[in-house]
Length: 231
Image: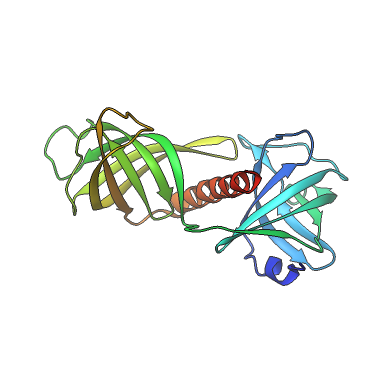
């Protein structure tokens, strides 16, 4: 199915995932869409790891994926030009066709991220945090699992955790309002203990924090969608 118009509707700056077609299980990189000319090329930033630009050669082939609404679109494209100035970027051949996968709840993904949490409504040492696990994450909130209750609905939590984006691990420190609390047996944590699941909605994020969450959530969603397709 020809999806050129859909691809063009991707906003400049949209996050794309690129993965070399060889070897098998090659690393995935997050890049940004710089621009597109139908029938000519897609221009994307060069892949980086820890701030270092990765070597890409003309003629190399990448699997390219993007999250657009509730769809993951994907195609294979050859690198037709590599440029280092005025910044490292690539021209990828413009696809004639793309594959697409419909996904549900494209704003929230499963996670298993170690975290530290503090109830700001409770008096005490501001440096004392409870151990927790972020079990799902979106750009606007998270679900946090603990073995002891953290807070009641309406409380304000300080949540700290790390996310890895493009090979770089970043520290996140966010404030979130408790929206719901539930008790359950979570077999992924401990099948013999009751765990408390606390849903929080993040308060205002900085632009940097929003970019990090968007990149992490998008990358994880692409991986989950493709994994479910292969199964």
